Length: 133
Image (cartoon, rainbow, N blue to C red; front, side, top):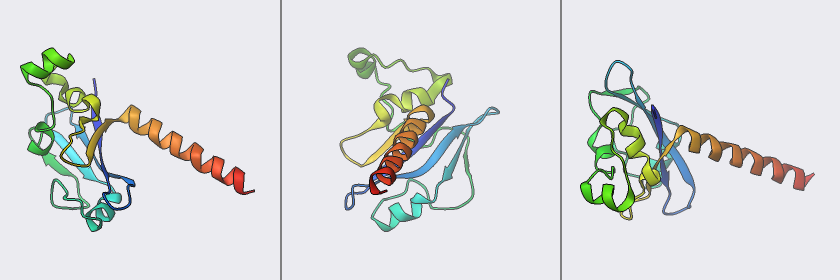
């Protein structure tokens, strides 16, 4: 069961990948979205944020439209790609293939993928430090 996903955006100008925020499924019901510090940088680079920026957590009783429109849950996608939609685990369907669309630069990744990216970035930084010594 996936309980948290991360929203990323790749800048059209600089090509850097920025962490906009995280979406967490709440145990009691509903969802919580929290912007990260990269959201303001992304906005300054031309990113259209899915919700008005705030430093507070944003609560939703159901999965927000920005996220539901990215899910591949139609019968066609189920048959063609084998996407299994389970309404009790919506975030798994949301993170399928990182929820990448050809029409924008957003992606949605699981916590495991996010940790893997962070670890590879940290090891890359360490390699650069070693090379410069």
